[in-house]
Image (cartoon, rainbow, N blue to C red; front, side):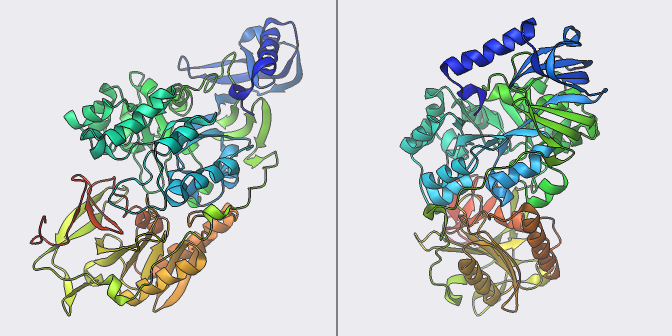
Length: 593
């Protein structure tokens, strides 16, 4: 149980004990001697001593050098930092259960995350979010939650569920819920749509924060968005954009995920002038990055390597995020704060020796020292979620308009896309893939058993020269996305995903080359992270055989249906012009083109 949830007499006893230990009337539980404490309150690094009283820090300073304690640990000059807090992450993007996620990042010093479960929410609605809350309860890592605000994300796609104000309010009343998650329908906010504005105001009603999502917004549009009371943005990609948002009072979440990496561009903003308004987030991280680089600790390490003052880098991953989310007693090595701590052998490399959670050691030398609770079994709401319509060659046809047609172009290292116009290759009046020109057919199939729609377009930037790749992870509607060089392989990939209950697959010549089943909501497996990474390695190798050269191709594919990030996307309803918030036809000469 978290300290904030301790009530009445138990809470009073806990605080009374910490006060008594600090005053010297009682011995502490642990004395950490000779630590180089990274003080995020002042930006200093001071060699001193830290006395713990159960879950709380009783005191910090020379006065506690010889204080009484049940256990004395001499850190011999090792660094001591607050436990790190990831301010915005979709746990489902790790493809594993919350316990497996914790096993990856807790030994690296990440003691808390703020999770937006809108991935599973868009598939299974409130029951899906409740499963994730249950699956993340009792872990030796705090999993706080923000209530998904966009289920579905836009009216231009078909999700598996809807969350209205009543469902959101029911979640906001829970103690682990910190606010309303990223309000992605920024065109609706700017247009003054009462249905969208009400979601931001709902957070205010509960005294919690509404998170933002404002890609490339500037000028009056940015101010209109923030005027709704929205407090943050994690979609910033450049320093000029970031500075404008900071000046407008926005809390800037600098993101370094698997598909989108913004830290290098935004690191110049991490100065004493700005760092109180900057936090670090990972947003979406795949198993490879979690196992090789970690979670939000990776941003601290990279920021220091980019020349950011180490104390400021740690601040961005601790107290700044805690203050933004109004988390008391979190994010600092200071009296009265929760004793979530990481002991480092090397500050610049952020090499973690020991992690303390609530005053007790939970990980040592990169391994957990405690048992994780077993994941709850999947509920009926999150199984059997891939319900495709009958599919045949006719469903994948794209009639050739006169002249050029719209095509999605991937932007390397970003989840942004560009709209380009291309002269398509045609056969019998139909647009077909043209692998010699890096033009693959892109398909989005509604998989929730609702409308049964199929959107078809072209994509460039994948490099596909043969076969098809497909996924039921497709932000944010999580319909089936597939890219391929021929319709037969596209259909074979879709059918195999239906058999698996969701996941990833690579197909060539009608034969499955590699696959990863994700039977929980078509998003998650209960397998260990290492097994998932091995399956992804096989999938990426298979994609490479098909010509794909970009990193994390299945994550890149998963974002091609994200109709809240500019410029052009594809959903089950067709091509979406994100800036205009409308469906658009493939060709120039069609009505509205």
